[in-house]
Length: 126
Image: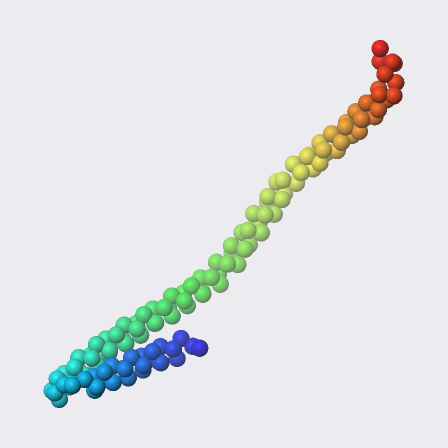
């Protein structure tokens, strides 16, 4: 459902219900005309306010859409650049860490071998 159709239905329903209430109450002719005049003036003012708010909302949405079309691609590009820079900066660190881990693994393997030898031949160390 479009917003404009909804608002037209809302305004039409409000006007019809107002007229129904005005005509169903016991009033003199002059009172009725006075009340209809006041009600129509109030509704015109409210309708003008709604039109203004809808127009303002349309302008805001249009402005936001234009801004998003330029800002989102720029932000994505900046993020890509930042991620690439981070990867470039952390690449050598990751390589160093991998080398250290490999060295530690080799040292552990050698230690395990020496422990196994020591457990098999405990008398050689004495």
